[in-house]
Length: 146
Image (cartoon, rainbow, N blue to C red; front, side):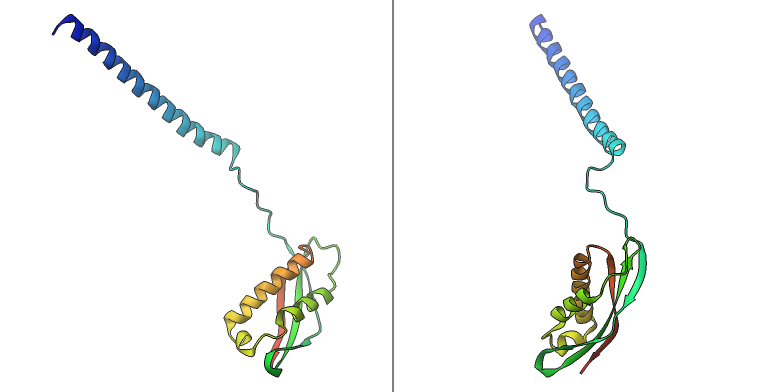
């Protein structure tokens, strides 16, 4: 080996070692620093609101709704108010939403458990929105089809 070959090998070895050290430092800083920042600052996702506490249950008189093909539904509702509700909500808006939701549905759609649960979920979402989250649940107290 000549002096020229030895001189070129040493800088190559040093530059490879330096490159490996820099890459390792970057990985440690990004990986460890990123995880540390995540745990220190918390996640940046939206914070979830705590579930509302239940308040009064407001029962309403049963109503009769026209279904498809000349059938009828006698529906009784109760609204579960939240504890934050200033006063017991008036049920007339919920009854109107129920009439709109159930009108012209077929007996077959409402006879199955899945069908009833699906329409109850849809009605609950609409009622919660209409009452600006002062109502947290809708209960069927009477459900009779003819």
